Length: 264
Image (cartoon, rainbow, N blue to C red; front, side, top):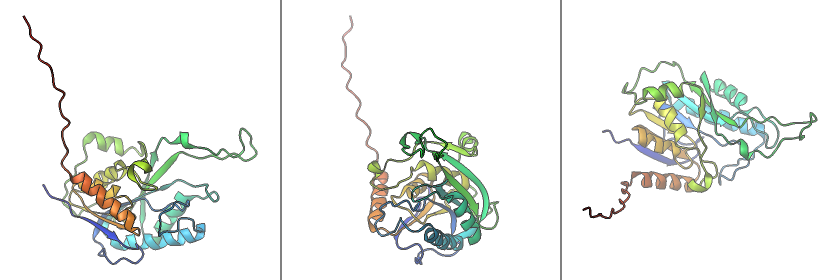
């Protein structure tokens, strides 16, 4: 069995030279949402106009790194209301197209987090109610051609998973930040589905905002080569530790001793 190559790069995605042009088969990432989360070196509370400038810049770099038949799965919010209502999905779709990407489809990720909602605007009044969809999306984009002709041609998605995942509404829980030790982790299930649905075994997968390393863990599970880039040395160390722990042999749970009973 092929052992995947995993690389973690502590660098600025706008400046790094660690990735060769046209060398990536699939990008799976969830960038900062600009909702004032403490990422350390990154400012997550920019003016929305400045945030879009930042997004256009890193999207342009991703376009350079992707192969001609490469795909891009971009996990972002549908919209946001912190700091003012903004149509994040629509704006980043437009920014991706401006960078050169072509649009394929949108997956709706139902995190089942409606219980966390605390803001309704004008309660039970038409004065100023807030409509908030408790979902995120995964934009599915590509560089030049949608039909994939490069790579090993080895797919590892099962029949049942293929039928389920090509339904564009995915329902599974998000990840708990306390469990992972990162302020905004996403579950390994999200990149794993994207990787198995949109790439071949032995392909190279990039996460330009790798954070706690969920995409890289999914690469190991699915025998893909992974590259993760992050501006935070702390998060790079966290990703390395998660990968180390995942590589440890699983200790079997000891079986409970069964007392023998004499029979006549």
